[in-house]
Amino acid sequence: VHMTTNSTLQMAEFDKEAAKNASTFAHDGFGNATLKRLFKKIVNIGFAATNDSEQLKAISNLEADLTGIYSKGKVCLESKGCLQLEPGLTDIITNSRSYEELLAVWKGWRDASGKLMRTKYTDFVKAMNAAIKFSGFNDTGEYWRSWYETPTFEQDVRTLFEELEPLYVELHAYVRKRLKEKYGKDMFPETGHIPAHLFGNMWAQQWSNIYDLLVPFPGASSVDITAKMKEQNYNVTHMYRVAEDFFMSIGMEKMTDAFWQNSMLVKPTDRDVVCHASAWDFYDENDFRIKQCTSVTEDQLLTVHHEMGHIVYFQNYRHQPRLFRGGANPGFHEGMADIVSLSFQTPEHMKVIGLLDEVPQDSDSDINFLLKMALDKVAFLPFGYLIDQWRWSVFRGDTNSSNYNQHWWDLRCRFQGISSPVKRTEEDFDPGAKYHIPGNTPYIRYFVSFVVQFQWHEALCREAGNTRPLHRCDIYNNTNAGNKLREMLRMGSSKPWQDAMEAITGQRTMSAKPLVNYFDPLLKWLKEQNKEENTGWSASCPSSIPTPSALAAGSANLFISITCFVLCVFFAFFQIR
Ligand code: BJ2
Ligand code: ZN
Image (cartoon, rainbow, N blue to C red; front, side, top):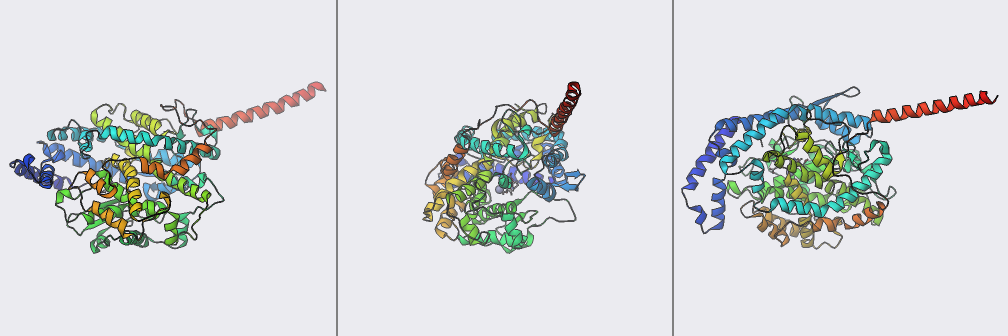
């Protein structure tokens, strides 16, 4: 969250003074666990601990500069003029099925954003690392990870990732097979990687926008939600009302008047803004806001639910002391933001809100639905995992400006099995093309979220007495499920996350099992589909990249061969005569 440099410095002064005052108490020996926890939070002031206010100024100014670059980025295309990320470039990446048009947008965005951030990002890392030492952390990554209050956190997320990898690998192989059919296998490197610009998403993080290219059973039921929304004249306000209605149906409060008055729900035309959707707590127990350049699409409808999920968490812990008004850990906030998406997208629920006419009951439609969900929830896993693998390495100093982009692509190739469609160098800075790098939002929270949301979904569906398979459970209207969820939300960060997890699932650990169970029928089907495929990919990036010009050269060769053949026949004919 960015504030002006002045207010950042004022806040730091306040935090420092509060920490100093709190230190006069022997709080480590407090008998009351909650009070002890509160004091620990008062003295743990992060970057504000530095004795050099120039560092804080630098951090604040650099973050503003970096997000400024991101929000001003434009790509000019011969056919379409100059476009910003939202909605223009996003629309093309979502809907275009032309290899070359996608490539122009993909590369154009990286030239217009990340590439301009390199030096500033290096300074940014330096300033943060210098400041965080005053709080006793070796580097900023160690500080970020400390929020999870788990000494084995790095190892724990690795283990979760490894448990989920087999599912991802099957999904990847199936998608690769179908994309080769669409774009021609010549465009795919021999290492097994998929070119990164073909997924309907600027960062290849979620793939459901290309569902139409991948439908398992074209004859069975599957709906185009965006088209349905347009057909039913959905507008922006209606999208927020639909989300609010879901949360209220499980017993959550409505949005406050301040929410409706102060939120920015459409893109302003008179100035550049950071369009990347976000949710804001103004900590006065009433002023909560969403900032989103909302357009009428299925993706955006899900993002509306995501951001409102954050607001509902804010509302539920508003009675807590200021320092407990946060998620049990950052992954919990994201999990709460996303959990409704698992109910909301079920065919059962789509029927309830009129975006589907009939709930299909056949197994083909079920596979269609599960594949669609996997394109969001499974495709995301390696992406959610790798962003902070990169950043932790940068903060640690293992990666620096001499190999920023190299290491980025090493991770993209290794974990996601995708590769760059054009040559990349250390002139480029592709991490910066993703909002959370200039925005400085830690990312492992989303990986955690994608795991725990399935644990909670399973627990809440049990609470709701659901009898359908997990992927068809919709907790809409179920206040038992809502109460259970609220029990956790109300705690904010007043207790360790393990307590919050226990409140909702009865268990104290993260587990990949509910996610695996949810997709079990799909995994079986994918394995069957991939029987003849070489699943997986080489650990390192391809050394040469097939390009459209190579393809053009290919057809030029074909042209020459045909010409030769014709001439040969011609001469042979005269020879014989
Ligand atoms: C669209 C969503 C973030 C979010 C925004 C921007 C960064 C933090 C906030 C925080 C919330 C809080 C987003 C959605 C899933 C994957 C990820 C992505 N925007 N943020 N203030 N997502 O998490 O809502 O609103 O905790 O207070 O970035 O990569 O798209
Ligand atoms: Zn979020």
